Length: 339
Ligand SMILES: NC(=O)c1ccc[n+]([C@@H]2O[C@H](COP(=O)([O-])OP(=O)(O)OC[C@H]3O[C@@H](n4cnc5c(N)ncnc54)[C@H](O)[C@@H]3O)[C@@H](O)[C@H]2O)c1
Image (cartoon, rainbow, N blue to C red; front, side, top):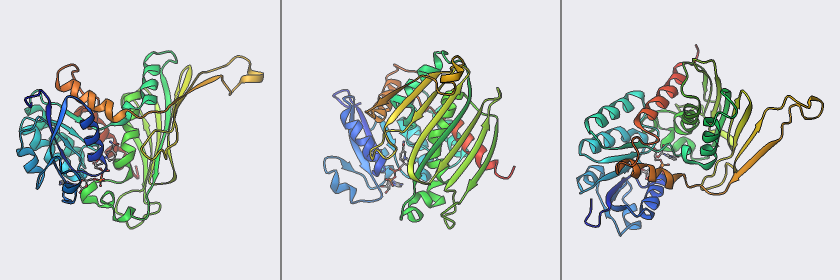
């Protein structure tokens, strides 16, 4: 900790996510940025106020309390394990590496690191619509979840095939591991877990990219609840939608706020099922919709990380256990192809 009582932070990987983490960390009074790095050294000129390190190892050599790991998926496990081994708290991007073995390895390093906090950036849990849905479901007012249907899709563009996300060494998996993992994380958040998976994992459009551009899955829990998921890189019109149907009503999340606003407004629509008035209202229950205008997810997840570091909260949202469960589910879906 620095003399002014702030947590000294380093950021590794200064692309889209590294810059978001930088902005939020600068805005948080308890953190102070000490060092940055990126393999692209042009980044140094953009941030002359911070020490620019030659590589990630040099970042970890600085006197730090916390590190943000925002590189390609490939480097997340090695950097995370090394940082935990050096006694740092680690905030790492999702996915937690490329494979289930990667997250297992990070969990072993976390165990050895004692009280150090390891958190992964599953920020969707901090969207207001998601938090509202969680509270509604936990209140029990609509009973148990019967089934869910989630779609999350974006448009891969002209540079899709040349992006690091289409390089198996850098990314490890296609759209399911990249974006669909957020939807799977939400399904686990709301429904607990799944014991059966059926799937199609396809190269619908980018035939030469060695990872999927679409994944379709059917998941079933031990209690018989079924979730349908579609994760797509050919969703030419961006879409986020999660319908949760319960014994006595439903909760639907439509749209999610992002920097481009391309997933539409973020809203939650909910209603109690209506069996009365069959002649007039059947199938059209009286519903309510709440719209959310702000995305504070990045800020709230940084606060969650901080609260865990200072002992105000025991376990982060996006813990290594959450990360393990969702990686397991991603690979259950990959492994279910053709079964
Ligand atoms: N939480 C979210 O919603 C969310 C959203 C987007 C991306 N991500 C994750 O964040 C990570 C980065 O994605 P991005 O969108 O910022 O990609 P990006 O391409 O914008 O940035 C990645 C940066 O990391 C740098 N880099 C790669 N390897 C490095 C290394 N070994 N050392 C230093 N720098 C390195 C690259 O030069 C690049 O500048 C990925 O794991 C991705 O899955 C999370």
